[in-house]
Image 1: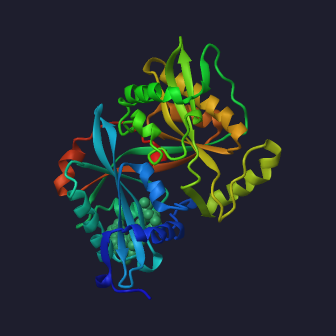
Image 2: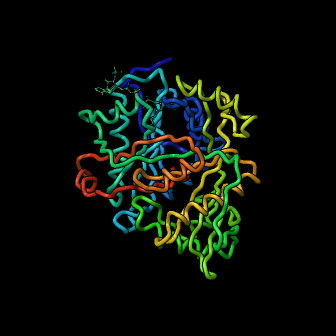
Image 3: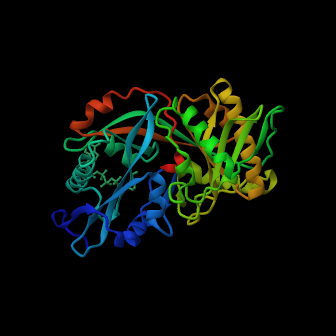
Length: 374
Ligand SMILES: CC(C)(COP(=O)(O)OP(=O)(O)OC[C@H]1O[C@@H](n2cnc3c(N)ncnc32)[C@H](O)[C@@H]1OP(=O)(O)O)[C@@H](O)C(=O)NCCC(=O)NCCS
């Protein structure tokens, strides 16, 4: 049964809602050239903990207690103007189809999100990302309708999917090796030093890297580190999150359906990975925690990615995903070198009147979001 808007209530999710949150995530794909559902099996909260130390889910509930929509808000410390800054991330905006097209319902949902944000005045910036080809969401959210938060686009997050079909050549004179437990301290120091000039990159500490919920499934040996003269100068991790976060293909639209057919026909000949059939997860690991010393950043980053990609072949991943900001030359180079598939997401700052000033003060370019934590 579909209830009228006035009978729907909005509140913070309770621990016992967990199976319902997972169900809504699984059943509500996003529109786009690939219709993807971001599943959170087998525990919604396990994936949520990776987003940040603060995580809240606001649910829309019918009179029977059934969850029909949700929006999540997480908070973590990110670099803004080279200063650690608490930033809220709004995501997982989902509404069951039967409840769509009701402006008042959405408005009440956003009011509930605003109340949760207002209860945390130390967090003045909120952001969200929306795939550029998710036309319904972009249409609605960027219309800046009366009574809704303001969405101001501040950049683009490019997700590159790199097929790992070919071994990459590694540069001479650079020691690249797998990380060890003893490296975690120096890795955290390097991330802290180098990511500060990348707006919206996470502020990592050694404790975060060792935290089994913040970096679930990430082992020291998943890092590849670069050394010069015995000093750690770069790092990247290959983070397999498939045990708690899955991107399930629900369908391919238009051109990409044809593209999939072509890729899969050519796959055995070219030894490239297949695109999965509808209903299956995209098998991938994420290149995360990428940092390289400033004076040689692009070359060093490419070498680290190449080394991690070679290790991925051995580990059986057919795709690696890498997030880069628009305007970061690394993105174009990686795309060319790996013939990567690119999916673009619009990055918006979301604000209500009480937060417009803080949002307007944000003028950074080429943000570097850590897609593994989104
Ligand atoms: C994103 C989502 C929550 C939006 O909810 P929705 O109910 O589908 O939103 P709608 O576009 O129907 O907008 C609701 C109403 O707002 C108003 N509205 C929306 N966009 C408008 C615009 N550009 N101008 C004027 N009014 C607009 C309309 O009254 C609209 O009703 P209508 O369908 O009669 O035009 C929902 O589509 C969903 O769950 N999608 C799948 C998951 C997803 O993509 N999430 C977003 C990525 S995080």
